[in-house]
Image (cartoon, rainbow, N blue to C red; front, side, top):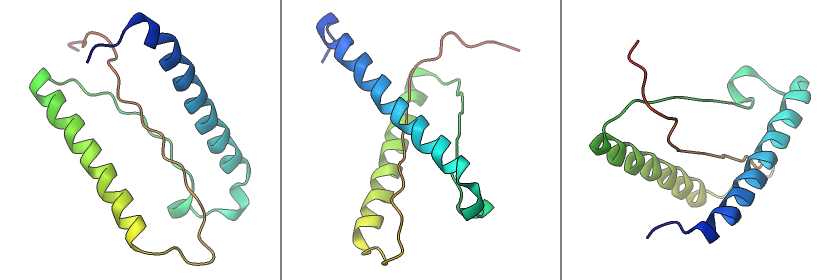
Length: 101
């Protein structure tokens, strides 16, 4: 399925809302740092990969499978009374042409 020009505006708005909410969550968690330990605090991560089209398909498939596994594992075990809700926001998008440094 191709992304049409009519879909792009909606996708842009959704992406903006999604990442603005993630930003708000992360900044609030950092501001509340007194309640956190290093091992259980918020995490921000950015990784840039240089991959072939074949590798891209495998990386995408592996990432989605990992996220599905984590989700299933969390659903399998009921949370304890002191459980906190955590948000995970992921973007996997082209970054441009690779550099050969």
